[in-house]
Image (cartoon, rainbow, N blue to C red; front, top):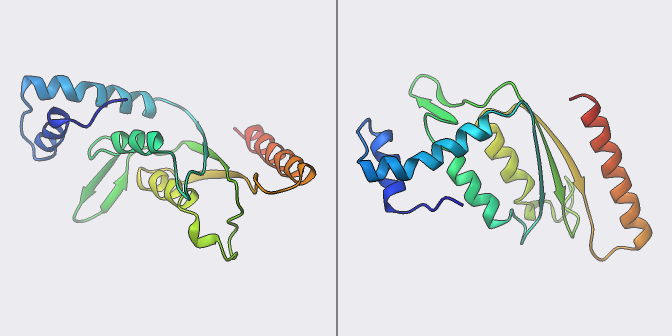
Length: 163
C-alpha cells in the first residue's frame, strides 16, 4: 500500500495550493494518481468487507484515504460546495457482521461500518449505492446463519441481474 510519507503529503499540499511539487514529491505522488485512475476506470464496483470493532478494516481505511483527493475524486468551490467526481456508476457493498445493527435497533448506533462506507461513497460522487448485509454471523444457530447467508446471496443475485 502507498505510504503517506513526507514526500506524498508535501506533493498533495503543493498540488492543492497550486504549486509545483519537487521531483521527489512528483515521484512519490505518481502511485497515488495511478491508484485513483485505476479505481475511477471501473464501470461498476463491488466492495465486500467485514465489520471490525464496529468499523472498517484499517487497510480499507488507508485505501480510502489515498482515493479521496481533491481534484481527483472530489472538488470544492464556494458556489457548489463539495462535489463528487466519480459519478454515473453503480456500487454494491457487501457487509458481514458478527452482531446485528439493523435500523431502529439498540445497537444501530454502533454501526460505523455501513454509515462510513455510504458517507465515503456519496462524498466522491456515487448515488447508486446498493447494500447486502449479512448479520448476525456470530452467536447464532447454524440454521439461522445459513438463512442469513442464503438471503444475502439472493439479494446479491437480484442486484447483479440489474448490472
